[in-house]
Length: 346
Image (cartoon, rainbow, N blue to C red; front, side, top):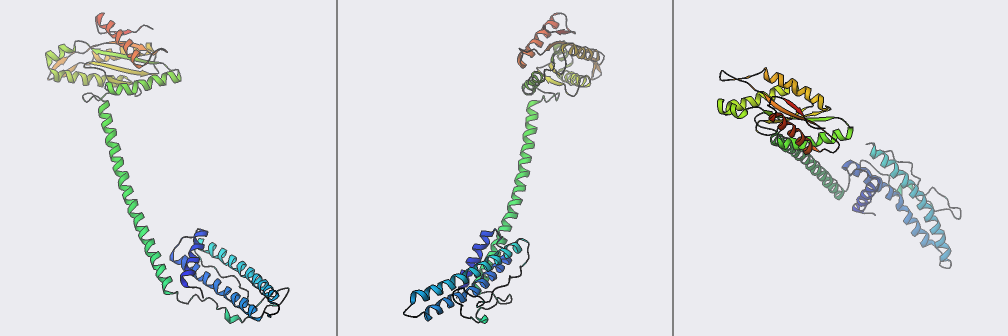
């Protein structure tokens, strides 16, 4: 008689081998199938013992040989039946259905070629009954499995909730970092890029121009007589002029063009896909608009003008040398009387 705990261990091991989920329903199904198979194999041992008892004392080797042949033949039959039963049970477990057990050979229905086996009463192998109650220790094991499954499910749900909260926190931190990065790279007064921002975007534009062999120009702009504006109208008026200047530049430039507040009253415009002549046309148009658009501050009219130097990217340039050549052209424009655009040497 096989103990219920041994039957349970056999059932669990077989479920693991087949990759079947260890749910209480699957475990009960495999337990009962294992119990039925072991009950079918039980008469084998009795047959073997009976043949041993009947063996003649004068010929024990021959009698043992006959008994062993019968036992081996019977074991092959039961093994084949067990394999079929477990295969159908595994397929049914995967599809959520309980399989119908395959037909089992009667314990005595076989014949060995050397010697017929003794008849064994069919009632000696009890038929499995799905209505029979499970042993107490097996029910306890199923209850523990159910409790463990419930605990694992609760832990998974809690982990998912914590993961969702963590993702939300990470997104909030990422948004704050992006906002801080934007704040660090932009001028707080005008909202355009500052020098830190220029150090990020200008190398990128230079690399792109070099990669696709496209023109790239920059224009260095300096407001004329800006110190006089601050001294005459006050620093608030000076700030208003700077904001007004950036608004006019945005109205003239394309979305792909970039504006940098380079210094106090100096601006750098980065013009992708634009050669030096095209850049001069842009700055000439900007100069006309600025002259025609004075700033009104506290009822007083403030005229604004600027000088500019333009440089186009060359093969031997990098971001720093490109800006330097534009700045030298700007200095030439200021020395020549201001309010004009000068092109850098090619």
